[in-house]
Image (tube, rainbow, N blue to C red; front, top):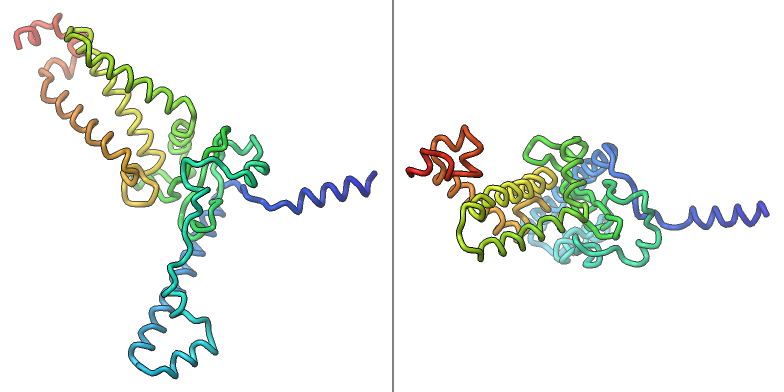
Length: 262
């Protein structure tokens, strides 16, 4: 019996480990690999410069014999991201079988080898969908271990977040086709607040634009950003001075003497 259990445990230990928690040590390892990759790129540039300067075939032959052929590596298109591990895709079957539910919504080390030298981490939901985030500081303040950013990431990756936003959009479309009334006009503030909250969560969770997988690196968010900016601009220009000090003016402008005269 003991032999059987030991064989079973050794077999389970032999399974490939796809999922490891993303820690500060993980980020340090990525930084170290990036530094090593930078050194390799510098060596590659030096070898190319040497070859171009010499202009002799003997230098290429000597380089091939003694060291790694950097020139061939540079001509190769290089590796590509795994299409099955892209953001929004479900885990492949081979990984889904090894995924434990306790790891859901936990920041994990990169599962795609293509991003091993890029500061990223992933979140896998209970439905085994993949979310990928930049491991750099969001808006130059929030590192991946910041509690505020952790909360934002948790909200963004939760299934109810998308449901609430889609429901809000559909409700907003319905309200827009209704006849104009003080009630329908007052809902504009509510919808604007929800859309602003959505964008704020995404920016805090992902960062704004400078790194990969940030808010404005996703083309779907371009329209959101423009619409929200216009909503805030129109709302600011349409407000009377009293609206910034009295909330009732926003929800019930007909009850405000100043707004009614305007």
